[in-house]
Amino acid sequence: MVNENFNARKCQDGFIPAHSEYRLRLSEQESEKMLFWNYYINKKYPHRMTWNTGRHRYLDNKWVAQILQDIVSLKRLPQEREHVQRFFKYFCRMNEIDMEKLPGPKGALLSA
Image 1 (tube, rainbow, N blue to C red):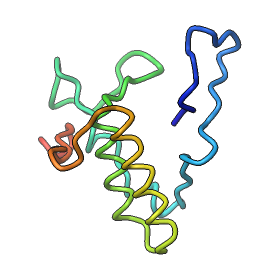
Image 2 (image 1 turned 30 degrees about the vertical axis):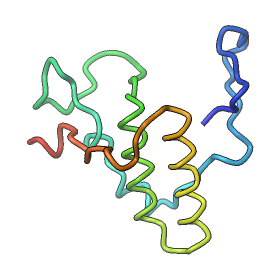
Image 3 (image 1 turned 90 degrees about the vertical axis):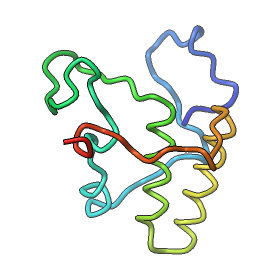
Image 4 (image 1 turned 120 degrees about the vertical axis):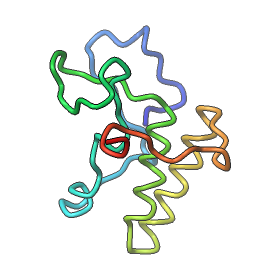
């Protein structure tokens, strides 16, 4: 997550600083449970789970909210879980996402 005052138009060096509070670190075990294809789907080829071309993928804000919501359920320590829950709420507020109406993930892996 970037700071509230980050202006992408003024970014000349390509470095995007992370928010001082809203940042996460997953353990190796947690990261293995977060499957990209649970969230991402190529609309042209919905049953393909390959990169094909390009180095970067755009993630819809709803997908990021779904990812954060799933990370909340992964965290076992109460303080970590609360931190991710605050991050999730902040992200939804900043991106005008209604947490109560957020659909579940519908990525290629879940559609297969």
